[in-house]
Image 1 (cartoon, rainbow, N blue to C red):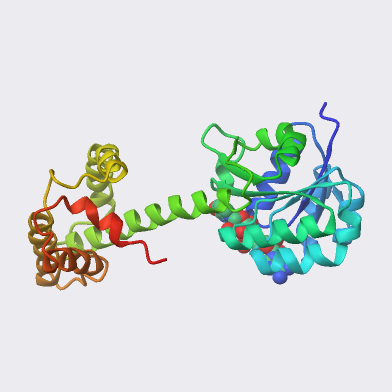
Image 2 (cartoon, rainbow, N blue to C red):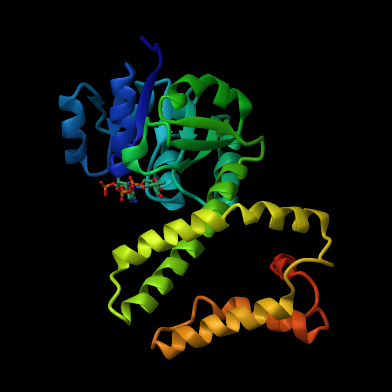
Length: 287
Ligand SMILES: NC(=O)c1ccc[n+]([C@@H]2O[C@H](COP(=O)([O-])OP(=O)(O)OC[C@H]3O[C@@H](n4cnc5c(N)ncnc54)[C@H](OP(=O)(O)O)[C@@H]3O)[C@@H](O)[C@H]2O)c1
């Protein structure tokens, strides 16, 4: 039986799934939620319900924070800094990299042991082989909590910069939302001729699955910074232009594609129409 007690702060969909998994794998769990009623089913299932965040911290070795956002995390951790001393605080609430760094810096000022994290899973995936969590910051905190964290999913340590887990989370979610935006537009185009989205979904999944390995060859071009060969900017401009025209012809907005065409237009206008279109990657840096 695991000998650490884990307090879970936040019993939304994710905090509840995490608590259930920890309990099912033999952990002593303490729960706290702003709306206290959500703790009742967990108490019935064997967790201890704490009346306050301070009490939850006091009863535990690891404090796992699964709140809504950065502001809610700071709102509830700052007043109990003294109670968190000697505990391992692991915050898996979704935040930006700089928010993660800010909370890590605050924790260091308070003398707390703090690890930041990001969840690459939905609640139903917790504890399954498809669940992955990313962690960054204090390596010692990771080592202390690792066994408990591994019950939730793969527990990958990204490095000492506390923002790294969030950064990878945000980068992967950026790719995901752009991909799903593509599906939204494809489904809207096909619906104009009566094809249900469910049918387009299958087509899109098959096509994207076949084409996705191309990211590897794009990555090689980006890393080598050799844009001399490959599909050109001008070829791609024509292709994307056709997609925009086709979408509009069907009465569907091409808003999601237009920014890409603008980037390609810029490259072409500055004499780079013949280089590999993957060079759009270099245009994205604004800092
Ligand atoms: N669900 C997912 O698929 C998923 C996937 C990856 C990451 N995440 C991340 O996991 C975290 C929790 O998500 P969730 O799915 O559990 O969300 P949720 O079901 O909407 O639950 C939100 C939780 O945050 C609490 N909360 C919100 N504002 C608060 C405040 N000001 N003070 C105290 N507690 C507050 C809520 O308490 P009340 O019950 O009192 O409202 C509730 O416990 C988020 O950062 C989310 O981005 C979720």
